[in-house]
Image (cartoon, rainbow, N blue to C red; front, side, top):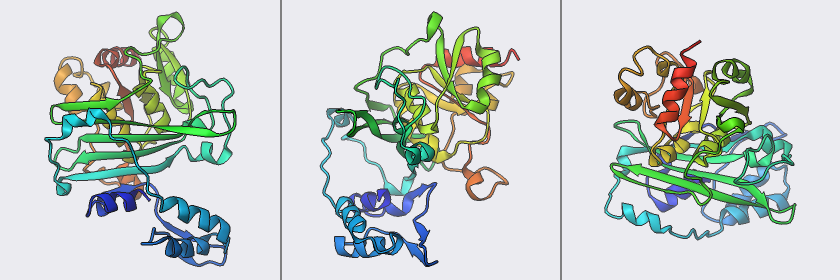
Length: 325
């Protein structure tokens, strides 16, 4: 649907979209079906019925939704970019149509979660949709959009979502962060909170416990969103289990805020602090080149791990703590 909508709005952009998922399914009778949004609801419904075992009611509801005309208000902040012209041939798009699949399937909710105040430990709020635009020449992310479809409930049952976006094109930056703090939320004892994965938590806790409170939450996109929202100061992952489609959109938003996403392993190198400004620029993850000697999805894996931050001073403090090991 993302590819369809981009193509509809900007002719030729559909073929520039790359992502984790594909649109080919096998139904219960073994038939391979390519799901595409057609030029009218009837044709789209016919395609959907092939993978929904003839469930015309579900196919009808879905086709009705995907063919809706949605009007999105134009934020005033976008006026900053009115004089900027982007050539479609010079940009690419990374998409993750559903990050946090396990949380989406389970459909739970953290009873302690308070939107904008703390971090969700599990459930639907950890699900995100990620759309990131990058420059083909430099690989740097320039536009990011994150949809959090299950942000809060109005009556304890019905969910409402939100959209967070940011852009950093040349020297022009803007972002839409209605609930973001000017300073990161500090954990107990005025320590900076750092998010990581369950597998990294124990190891990082050993190195960071003096200056940081190490927390976990599911969903790479959600953890990056928590850095953007200043619910934590950074997201640290030493392992190679995130991909370009996970980080491109949040990275663009963080760049618009003055932060970024750098390669974890190289950030811990001996000359990082000595060449601080140069190192921070050079270690930003880029999105235009595949990993050498890697195939399939691994070609677009963030092999060196990631550190996402909204403040360079926090990044320096993290690098110092992690290199003490």
